[in-house]
Amino acid sequence: MLKIPSHQVAGHHASSATRGPLIDDSGRFYKPLQGDERGSAEVTFYDQFTSNTQIPDHIRKFFPIYYGTKVMQASDGSEHPHIVLEDLTTHRENPTIMDIKIGSRTWGPDASDAYIEKCMKRDRETTTVKLGFRISGLQIYINEGVGYYKPTRDRVLKSSVDDVRLFFKKFVSSDPNVESGMGPDRDLASLVYGGPNGILAQLLELKAWFEDQIIYHFSACSLLFMFEKGLVLEGGSPNAQVKIIDFAHVTEGNGVIDHNFLGGLCSLIKFISVAIGDQNGHSQ
Ligand SMILES: Nc1ncnc2c1ncn2[C@@H]1O[C@H](COP(=O)(O)OP(=O)(O)OP(=O)(O)O)[C@@H](O)[C@H]1O
Ligand SMILES: O=P(O)(O)O[C@@H]1[C@H](O)[C@H](O)[C@@H](OP(=O)(O)O)[C@H](OP(=O)(O)O)[C@H]1O
Image (tube, rainbow, N blue to C red; front, top):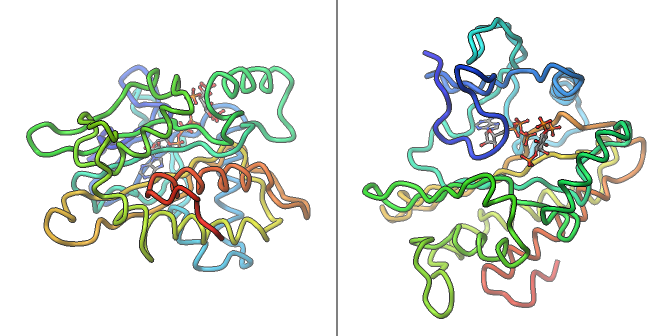
C-alpha cells in the first residue's frame, strides 16, 4: 500500500493536488521525477553512481540504495515516473531527523541566469551564504504523549546563525521546548554527535573523501541526520546516521574538488563540534 511518508522533513510534499514522495510497506521511497531537467539529472546521477566502481564501500553507505525508476500512480492521481529508493526511515519507530542543504551556493555550473537569480535570493535570505549550509527542515521526537517538535518550513528557513546554533542544541536535547539559563540540556549530544559511531565521526569520514574526490560536484544536495531517542531510553545506542540525498543538481567534477560542498561540510563540522561542547571545535 502506497502512503505519504510521515517522517519527511523538507522538500516537495505529496497531496491529492501535488506530486510528492510516497512510501510502501516494503521499505521503498518513491520520489516523483521533477518535470524539468532536474528529474532526469537525478536519474542520470543514480544510474551512473550505482555502477561507478571508483566509489569506496565506506562512502557508498552514505547514499540511499537505488532501485531504478518506475512509472506508477503519483500522489495526485496521474501516471508518472518515480525514482525508487530505499526508505531511510523504514526501520525507525520515532526518528529525530534534520535535513541540511550543503554549500554556500545551491546552483550548478550549467544553471540559467534566471535559476541563479532565484537561488541566490534564497541563499542570501537563509544561512546558506553566511554558513555554507542551511537547515531545510527538522523533526525532534519528544515522547509518546507530546510527539514531535516540528517547526514550520517558514520558521526553519528564516533561521539566523544563532537560530542554527540553537537548533543543533535542541536536536540532541531531551525536550527542545525546555531551556534553562544554559539553553537546551543537550543530554544526548555526546551519544548522538560524539563517539566512534556518532554524527561527527561520520561527517569526518565524508570530509576525508570530499578532500580527495574529483568525480562529482554535489550542488544543492542535503545531508540527513537521523537518530532514535527511544533506543537511548531503553539503554541502547541512538543509531545515529548521516545520509546524503537529493541529486538533481549534481555535475561532473572534471578533476576539481567540490570546494562548495567541502567548505559547507567543514563549516557544519565546526557547528556540530561546538554543539557537543568542545568550544575549540574538532582539531582534524
Ligand atoms: N530515501 C529517502 N528515505 C526517506 N526519506 C527521504 C528519502 N529521500 C528524501 N527523504 C525525505 O524527503 C525530504 C525531501 O527529499 P529531497 O530533498 O530528495 O526532495 P526535493 O523535493 O528534491 O527537495 P528540495 O525541494 O529541497 O530540492 C527529505 O528532507 C527527507 O525528509
Ligand atoms: O530551500 P527551499 O526554500 O525549500 O527552496 C527550495 C530549494 O531551493 C530546492 O532546492 C528547490 O528545488 P531544486 O533543488 O530541485 O531546484 C526548490 O525549487 P522549486 O520550488 O522550484 O522546486 C526550492 O523551492
